[in-house]
Length: 97
Image 1: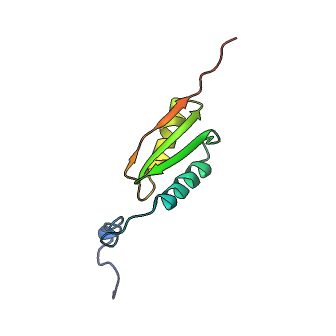
Image 2 (image 1 turned 180 degrees about the horizontal axis):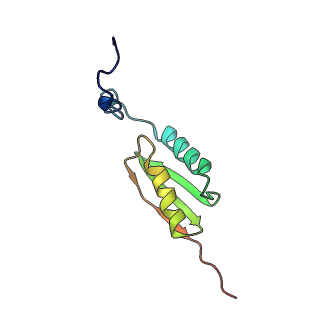
Image 3 (image 1 turned 30 degrees about the vertical axis):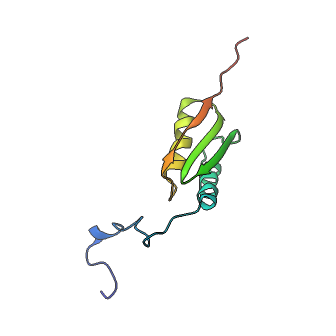
């Protein structure tokens, strides 16, 4: 099989290994993080703001619960080029009375 993988077990082992010196721009990373947050069907991201500096993502704002806080962090962490997620999201407290 010319040009193909000899063993299916090898498929995908080079994912994430780009050209030497390549680094995604913060603008591209921010766009992808915002897209992931927007497209997540279980997360209301309407009160989340995303900032980026040097590959570090900082989501800030409010979410409904701790599960959503973690979900937003996981969405950001899966984006290529993210080096760290500093999760500054707060769980919106329900006012009593």
